[in-house]
View (tube, protein in one colour):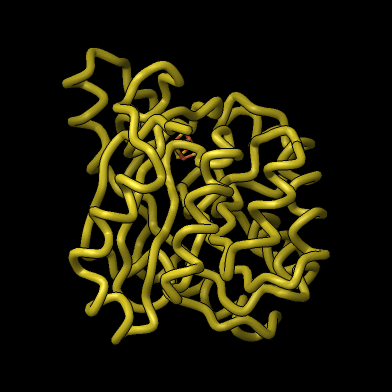
Length: 243
Ligand code: SF4
């Protein structure tokens, strides 16, 4: 079996515990306005790799990953669009004793392989785009229902979840958003942490280089005070570690 891979990173430190080998899988059906991996969207792109070939790459730095309780993070794009491939890769990594993470926005049909992948993995990094259906659609060009069904699936699993939320001025930073995010985060009994990620403008250049129109031009990153306000509210109103 082969999977479509966009790229690799060998020393990831923010996408799961410890030092991690990041595999960016190719393909995503969402169209997030702030996507900083715009070149991962095309489901026919990327380069083909077998799970064995990926493991071989990862193993060259195994001692770093092992010593830090790290491992592999399968991200993208939307990795679970290649569910069968992810399952095969996870099975191989588990044999090596390293930890496994899937970084997903959950915009996928719940197939047998998706169920198996979320059962096999140690961690899921779940990206909450917005809790409001209309904003979710405006921001991602995707309906919220599919991601909500995925959220219900992972809530039932024995898997540790880290939530992630991009704070985007004018879209996801209102008082209502803050309250709703805390409520939604509390509905994940197996979530231990939430990361509030301030929107940044570093993706603009990539969009322009690829010849695409970046619609968030003119939107500034949130102020440090606004970011702190969200974090503080979540610290007070959830049991999660907030970063
Ligand atoms: S889900 Fe991730 S890869 Fe897909 S468009 Fe959104 S930010 Fe980009």
